[in-house]
Length: 93
Ligand SMILES: [Zn+2]
Image (cartoon, rainbow, N blue to C red; front, side, top):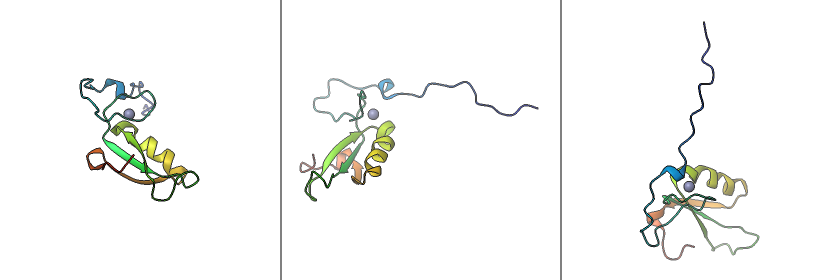
């Protein structure tokens, strides 16, 4: 009888594996370091130590990095909300 052990580790699909069209001018790109994937989410945050309360900084994230980036902001109490990139307005940023 054999217990199910950890199987062979399959490399997780990285953002780099996602086809990105380079010829999309101004297309939003994930803010995660080294990631070139198209952004799907906009994480809106504010650092009360350096920003006025109304100010919103925006990090863009692909599906892969959304959780990590928002956890980073959330740990510091910076995260205000996360919206689909399409919902961003000109006043964000
Ligand atoms: Zn990414």
